[in-house]
Amino acid sequence: MAFDIGAAAAFLHRTEEREAQAHPESARLLLATLDRDDREFAAGSPLPLLWHWLYFPPMIRQGALGGDGHTRDSGLLPDVPFLPRRMWAGSRLRCTTPLRVGESITRRSEVVSLTPKIGNSGRLLFVGLRHVLRGKSGGEIVEEQDIVLREPARGSSRPPKPTTPRAADFECTVTPTPTLLFRFSALTFNAHRIHYDHPYATDVEGYEGLVVHGPLMAVLMLDLLDRQRPDAKIRNFTFKAMSPAFAPHPLAVKAEATDAGVDLWIESAGHVASTGHVTEGGNAE
Image 1 (tube, rainbow, N blue to C red):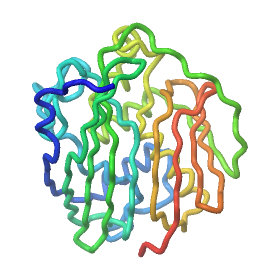
Image 2: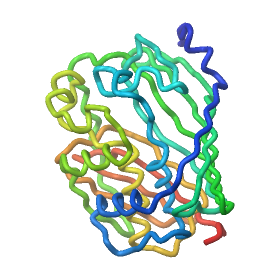
Image 3: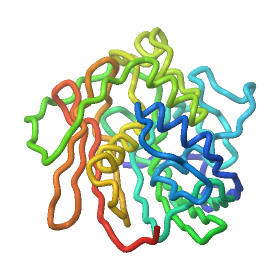
Image 4: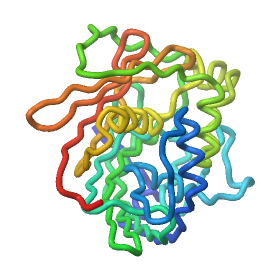
């Protein structure tokens, strides 16, 4: 089933172009947030995949934020008054050549799809975004994002079904403390209150605690792979949010090599919170 999305339909094929400088300081701050000090980010170093998120935060003035900390009008995403909640459901990325620290990066974004649906939680609007990023040195990343706009919370969220833990080739455990969530929010200029305002997350949104960012879990999955296989050349990466993860439940970040690449996933409190998959290729260093 679908429904009329009204004026939001005009956002289909809307575009935005931005330019940013990939300053090494931001990369060093994310490295510290990941509790690492084992690499340098000199000018010209390859920028790890996903870390371009540091350089294109939402440039929205304070007065344009909604009560939940999200922007009501980003200029690119539609503002649908009856769908105030937003969730980053996943992304698909293709990296032909890595971007590099210190260089100028351009990003061209387009709203490529608007798909209304009615699910168990009510009305949903799936927004497909396509970002093409190009670095001055020739690097290129194409990212397709799935954003979901949702209705207001209806009481406490329903806990996901427990799953059987899955064996992995390598894994690590990360505890999502409030400080970790706050630092990642600050680095990505994400003001969504569910990640740092415990009373808001529990009393207003109905979550059991502070919510771990979906993008942070994606970064943690690739960070695990980087720690174990630092020479891996990632050609494609997909990730999908499966169910919320909350602080302070530990995140079991896991990976398993397959014939098709590397499967990645995160288990938290007895359920799978996020999944990912990497394929490797000959992208230049």
